[in-house]
Length: 402
Image 1: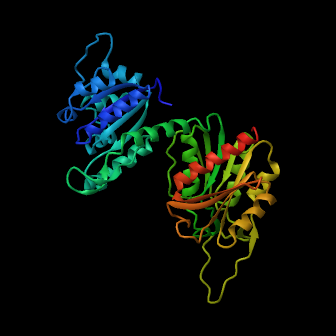
Image 2 (image 1 turned 90 degrees about the vertical axis):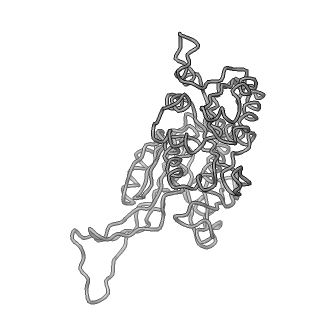
Image 3 (image 1 turned 120 degrees about the vertical axis):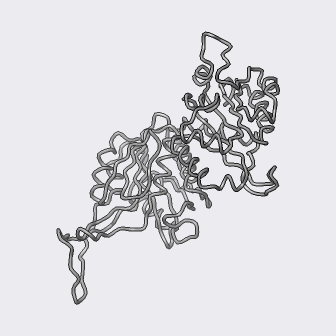
């Protein structure tokens, strides 16, 4: 996976620099072309000569050292790199990147490169937990930087906790898996629905549900990271879709979502309907706020259109996946929904189970395809669950030669 890849290793100043030596050696042994770029502070921990010997290439330190008059060194390296790794990544270099500061060769080159950038933080446990560092990492994550979380253990400062640079082999494994996944859905068009819908009663009241949209957004983001062209149809949520390959369509009501899904359905390869759509809406709505009465009030409800049923009826070549969020006998209900609505697969979860409820960051699901093959996906982040679901979908599509 890394053989003949052009990899820029950015080394910033921290005690974990010694691990970057091992990382350089391992990358070189994998057949990668490695160029190392060090901050001035990094050179106080390990000599550039060490990295030169391990990478068998010149080590870059100073923006103003131009050994080849035909090239501007930092731009040449920025264009050359296919993958950039910052290890160790200190709070300082993370903050520079988040604010676009380019005051040395490493920060300047990283701002100029179009390579995939992997950041492996290493710092004191309290620094890692500081709001400024957390905010900067979130900003970079939204811009498409890939973070390799630090490990927990004994730190050089004497503390025990999260902040230790991840082991070099783990860093390599994470990058290889990510690079492999980056083309999993290449050329595929994916349509995802997410969040709740709102059915208006009057200008200030509506019927809705507890869906946060986090599962659907995780699926959309992960599908885009896997190379897909994604259309995300979402109800009212307080979430942002970051990836440039995502086209977001905002809707409010079940009828709005019905129309949007059908509009984009014909040219789609994979459809994942994770939205929690209202099954009923008020039969009568009011242009003005309904005033409080002295007695009880009754609201008559009528059925909304069944989006998933309609998609199943109109299906041609699409791989159609539904969601079943249940509180009792979820597997039994999910199987029935799979058959009734002509789905290719269904994702079933018991929302009353701890760790699988609405608005949380984790989920526990069962993936069931129309052949009856069942995969139980244990408690994990919604991002991880999304990746597992997409891998299972591609496996099923490959088996069907779609």
